Amino acid sequence: MPQITANTKKQNGGPSLAENHKKILLTGATGYIGGRLRRRLEADSREVRCLARRPEILEAQVAPSTEVVRGDLLRPETLPAAMRGVSTAYYLVHSMASGGDFAAEDREAAKGFASAARAAGVKRIVYLGGLGGEDELSDHLASRQEVGRILRDSGVQTVELRASIIIGSGSLSFEMIRALVERLPVMVTPRWVRTLAQPIAVEDVIEYLIAALDAPDGPSLVLEIGGADRASYGDIMAEYARQRGLHRVMIAVPVLSPRLSSLWLALVTPLYARVGRKLVESLRNETTVGDASALGMFDIRPRGLAEAIRQALADEDSQVRGEKRRMSAPV
Image (cartoon, rainbow, N blue to C red; front, top):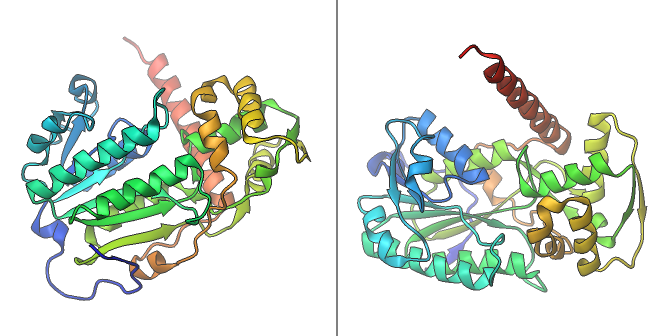
C-alpha cells in the first residue's frame, strides 16, 4: 500500500465510509486517549465495539449501546470475532509500560491486528503514533513508527496520525512535566529540556481521531498533527508554572545523560520510574510538524500551548469538584 500525504478536503458528494459502514472497533478503550475517544464516539451515537482483556471492568463504564468483547492483541486467535462486521478499527495501544521488550511486543501485536483486520475485510485502520524524523530515533519513537508501517503494509487503508506531546490532565508526558514543576523550585535541567516539540491539546487529538473516520478513501495516509505553537520542554514547564503562579528556576547543564536523567526523574516522580528512561530517551528527538497536510484535509485548527494548559487545568478542577460532590452526596 503506497504512503501519501493529503492536502485536499473530501469533495465528493457521496456518503462517507463512516456513513456506509458504521461499526467501529476501539482498542485501548481503558487508556487515556481511548477512554476519551470512546466517550466522544458514544456521544455521537456511533456503533462502538471495545476490545478488552477484562471486559467485566470496562462494561461498567460504557454506554448501554456499546459492545465489549474479550480479546488480547498478543493472542491473535481472539481477534477474528472482534473484527467481524467492523468497518473502522482504532489502534490505540502500546507496550511502553511493559517490563519486557516493548518494541517486540508492539511489533507482534501490530502484525496480529493487521492480519486480522485484512482477513475480516476492515476498510480502515486509524492509528495514533508519534512525530519524529526518520534518523536516529529513540527506541520508543522508532517502535511507534514501525507499528505504523506494519499497519499500512497490511493492505488495509491506514490513517496514521503522528503527534508530539499531548497536553491534558492524565497524559503521561504532561503529568511528568507537572510533577517536576510542582515539586522542584529549582531544577538542574539536562539538554533535552531545550528540544523543540509541538504540543497539542488532547481535545484536538480527539477531534483528529474523529475526523479520520471521514478521511478520503484510497491509499494510506501519514498525517502530522500538532498545536499552534512550537515550544521546548522548558517552555512548557515555564508556561505551566506561570499559570499555576509558581516561581521556578531552571539551570541547564550539559552532563545529564538520558540514563542519569531517568534516574533523577524516578527519584522525583516515582510514578514514572518504569517508563521514565524510555520516555526521556525520546526527548532528545525534535517532534515538530514538517508537513501541514492535516490542516488542509480537516477543518480543525488546534489551539496554542497556553490555551491547552489552561484547558487541562480547568478539566482537572472540574474533575475535583465532581469528586467532592460525589463524596458529599447522601447515601
